Amino acid sequence: MAAQFGRRLRKGVTTTAVAAAAVAALAASQAPGATTEGQGGQTASDATPSPEEAADAAGATGNSPYYTDLPPLNSPNPAPSTSTGTDTSGVTEAGIPATVLDAYKQAEATLREKKPGCNLPWQLLAAIGKVESGQARGGRVDADGTTLSPILGPQLDGNGFALIKDTDNGAYDGNSSYDQAVGPMQFIPSTWEWAGRDGNGDGREDPNNIYDAALAAGHYLCRFDWDLSDQRDLDRAILSYNQSTEYLNTVMSWLEYYRRGTHEIPDGTGTLPTDRSDSTGTVRPSPTVPSTPPSTPPSPKPSPKPEKPADSGSPSTPPPTTTPPTTPPTPTDTVDHLEAAGDTQLTAMAGDAFTERMSARAETDAGKAVAKVRIRFTIVGDTDTTFTGGESVATVVTDSSGVAVAPALQAGEKTGSVGVRATVVGRTVKGVTYRATVTERAADTLVRTSTEELTCTPGGEFADAVELKATYKGAVADKVAVTATIVKSAEDPTENDKGPYFKDADDKAVRTLSGLTTDADGLLKLPQLYADDTEGTFQLLITTAGGATVTVDLTVAAPPAETEPPAGTETPVPSTSPSASPAA
Image (cartoon, rainbow, N blue to C red):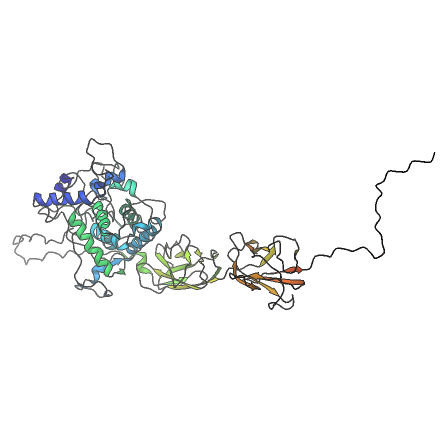
């Protein structure tokens, strides 16, 4: 492992053998392979390690170069200025391109559900994304989150870097001789092969897609059941990504910076880093440039002073100023506003899925539809209503007609109004607000499950319990509120003060029960009923939210008395004497 660190050309570290040994020692002590599980003590002659174990030797990136720019000292909290020119306040550095930021937050939400004990903050993904690729080269991604051009690190040929021969036949990096780190999170192909994830739901695992790469990075950082809210585990996770103490310190600097505040900026407008860990006298290829040569130098270092042209006898013409090529506007740049493409008022019962789905149409100022634009739907307010899958935010790309349809809403148990806001990712333009209403669970039909008559003697208890079933539009009505009352009559629904009764927790008679609910099958069995000394037929009225009712008759009567024979009537007694003999 120390040899690998020695091959790295790190700024300020490779100058002494002592520094290299210190890095190796720290990485060995904090990497997951150094635990008592014995994952870090293997030699070349040991058994072949698992992919996760093998990743510890070279990290997610193969220990490729990274950006070493540190955050500004100024606060990142103020909103960015829209004016042009150099920003020295540090505000621009805090901005994260909209699609890239969305990818980080979606990855955090997914890991919160899949691996809640990891406590992965999206700011950690943002810090790694800044150090690895300058947030996908300032957010140069399309509407699906895929980089507009490949982001490749230098080939890992052992010449100043680790030696990792080709493992993917060039499938990811286009290099069939040596591996190269790929994409905005800089995964080497052999790591991506097992760590790759589909973060945008398109059925592919693409390291060049920020949604896929961010989710993969989150799973990679959480793979050993680390708790990233613990600084020791956080250090181990970062070092497992790239085994360098300088890398750890740089990532931690950006993590703390983003934790203090950040904001969304349009895609393609992010600040590009300048300093790299492999910066030496010889300029190496940048890990954040495409495989095709760029039109401008990859480093901000000044070019050598041009030689003075030979005197031709005519006034010299100054060399033409090189200007970067004009970037054509993206579809997102052309959006002027959003329009509602369907109903903006939706209603569903608590616990049910909304049958209608919200949709928004992206348009230019001339009203023309704009395709391939990311629309973010956000549920706002104090509610437990979510989109299908349990998320409160969903991002959808507009289709050829400029329309994005949000996932179905799933109503929670909190009733009332729910707001949903649709905005354009990467632009501050007029959006659309939808209003969804969650109503109380209800039943439209309520019936007894038995036809047995309910009778009782005075002062006794009813032998059979009252069981009911509630339905709504023919389907089971579960968790529906029910009230049961002993009423004076079918015409007078006020509570009766005599007759059958229930008992409360103190064994006192009560004739109204509220707070009852049907179970998952729509069934409800009432508590035991008792009778006082009043005889007669009484009515039990049962009602539900939604208006379903049923009345049950309760009869209290004394048992029939035994019948006495009429006076003067003798009861014949059968003879037991032997029969008289017949006369001779």
